[in-house]
Amino acid sequence: MPELPEVEVLVRHLHPRLVGEVIRSASVTDRRMARPTPPARLMGFLNGARIIHVQRRAKFILFDLQPAGSAVGSTTRVISHLGMTGRMFLQPVDSPLPRHTVVHWEQGDRRFVFTDPRRFGRFTLDDDSLQNLGPEPLDPDFMDCDLQAILGRSRQPVKVRLMDPTRIAGIGNIYASEILFVARIHPSTRCCDLTQAQGLRLRDCIRKVLEEAVRLGSGLDLDFPGGEPGTGGVFYYGSRGAKSDSEAPEHFRVYDREGEPCRVCESRIRREVEAARSTFFCPRCQPPPRNPNST
DNA sequence: ATGGCTGTTATCCG
DNA sequence: CCGGATAACAGCCA
Image (cartoon, rainbow, N blue to C red; front, side, top):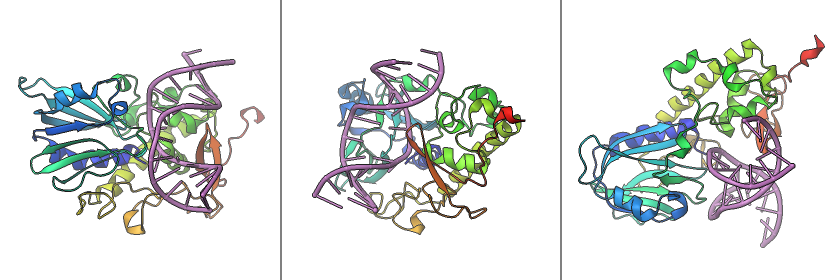
């Protein structure tokens, strides 16, 4: 369940371990992940390339590579996405290749591995997905943006729009619910009915909730003793997928807590479906919007 | 055991 | 153009 915070934590983990390394024996085993780039072309770029930079944009992970034999300063960018089930980690080169490995290479004495059982992810040279992304919630100037203007005067529920990457980058299904709870805004509130105060509060809560999640995730050890997640540390720190509390440092406020007591007022958390996605909220802390015509 | 649910996003419709 | 539905897929849980 990688959303912005998980991807941010992963990138902070990978950056110092990858930058400066030279890629050997790269293999891209799934052409759907690489589409529309032919896997052979991608492997050609990877082999012998030096990793110059690893960064996050929205939920995308960008690898800037200096291909073998090319001048210093000329880089090629690989755009990757974890989809719903993607994982990236390093393992000893003599470890068995995990199931569902879609990309792997050797660097130094370790192997970089990208696994994705559901194969909703990407690993490609095609940068189209980067063209229409909204502002980054963790950028300093995000706190100056006019969120009401960004969301627009749409009748669409605010929860659905929060998850629209062309409006704001990086908010997925889990954090959309979490953010609206902290902002005390009902998820089905139409964007056009948001008050100015709600717009300001929502912007501040987006930042606050995502920053907090990054901070929680930053304490995790992503070096897995056996070379594979689940054998030691953890990558996903959501409520699903965690085998124990120690593997789930994050306690969601509302997500996946239907029927459980609100941590603020003890009302039962409710689940509703917006645009075919589960949405969780507290009916008391997040009252439905008053009909704007009634006053 | 079967079927319904799941993190994302691109693409298809009306 | 907008918004809703669907598809891509495997695993997990009831």
